[in-house]
Amino acid sequence: MARNLDRRRSVPLLCAVLGAFALAALQASSSLAFAGSSGMASRNSALVGRHSVAEDVGAKISSSKVFVVSKEWCPFCMRTKTALKKMGAQFEVMELEDANREPLVPDPSAVQDYMEQVTGARTMPRVFVGGKFIGGGTETLEKASSGELEAMLKEIGALS
Image 1 (cartoon, rainbow, N blue to C red):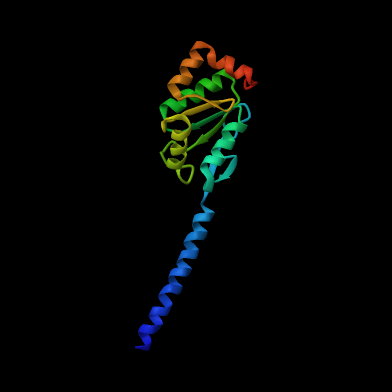
Image 2: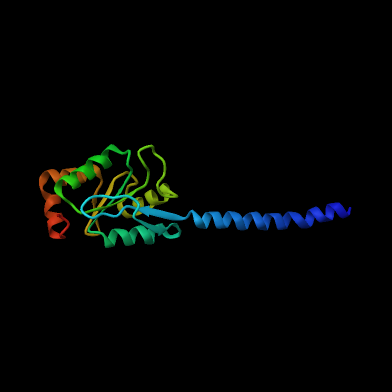
């Protein structure tokens, strides 16, 4: 009987200890990776807290002249970033997944959910110029072809 009592007391203690470790691990892994830019896209130059995707991504959108949410393996994303680079655009990129489709942020779905709230779609890429959403890959490439994108970039001083 004494042995069963000891188990009853130790199980809640064990659960509390394991819970504390799980919480610490979750807090340690909770960050979003952003790629900064100086003339061209670069990778993972800043970290932003995961606990507030909307606040953090929203702040990045509003503080960047040109901001692209992308996946490295996505052909539309590649074409869009190539078009921006060819134009000499200064832009920042947040890559959600690498070329092997491995996550580069703790929860790519959370970022895509936020993109759906802000832009109406979860598809990649999502392109913002001067803090305003201008479209996905197809729309951005159409604007590049028509000259509209270059005019937008000149207006905000995002061409090098």
